[in-house]
Length: 425
Image 1 (cartoon, rainbow, N blue to C red):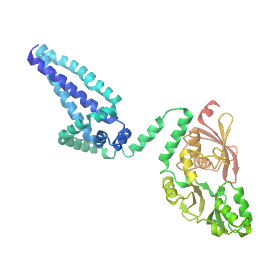
Image 2: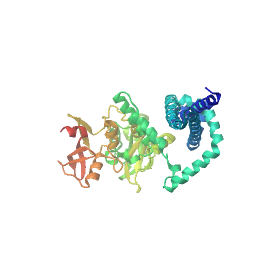
Image 3: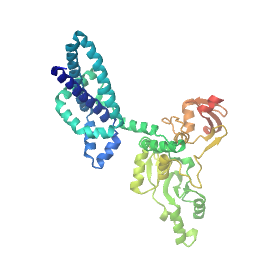
Image 4: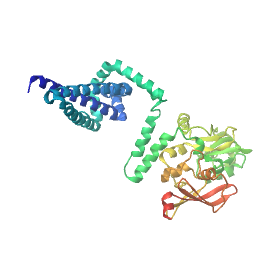
């Protein structure tokens, strides 16, 4: 073979290798784990940090790699066409098209991208210095190309600067849903991780103990009566009210009461409740759980009184309530697994109207909406736009809801049949 043919053939092979480098680099840099590389950067890995900085400007990175890839592919195709025309005449154009298509597809696209996809982290760190240099060299051209692309997209009403807002959170939620493992253990882990992400979106009013379910003490009652109520209660902190239940004047801690009782040598009538009561901490019902959790930590308190915009008592919230939103119900000898829920034969559920949808979704992976309401009774009232009668049934969100009990205008007990059981019968 003539030397005039060997040189361009050798150049074509080099260009194909370069094309494979550009293709593989693009795949490696886009597929590399952001979390793992961020962790490596924190540990002092300089190349991981370089990869992260390159990916902070993805438009420049992709522009430079695509520019390099197109340049070498076009040059390789032009050289191949020239060589094959010399060898086969006009038919060389056809042969060049077939040969270069197969060569580029196999050796410059599929092979390097497959390798890069399966070794994205290690490959991205190896190529980062060279890619960084390429980006600098091609910067003037890629900046111009990027500007043209942005302007063209704006003509069609697309602003790519806003694309990806919130994408990290969505990716994290997606990763949580893809988490696999033993079914029960995995469901619990997924529920916990989802709840952590939701803390900033859930308000205190969605998880608080409603005032009608709060055990409260009248500070004007005889001391011996109050002591009996504290001893009979499963709670260690109890709100104290005076004149009316909206007027919370303190919080009584059972431990402080016992210390005072010992100081008085068991003489209940000598106990001074005003001296041992703690000042109540009032918070608005619209406080986000993430903010309230941080506030509990900063104040080193476990108990807060929830009020509405008019200062009326709405309920109480404790540190345990917020922690249970993350880890699920923390049961002790006084608790039930999801209070107000009884599992019936045939995978049906008898549920009190006051049970929150969040608790049901967490425990049974139901996915019922809770944006407009917090309890299961609230869901039915919202959807029905009426106060149902006992015996009525409703089908919402593929669930069946049978009204079992009602007290005045309040739905107190509902039988819920999930979608799979409805399909069966």
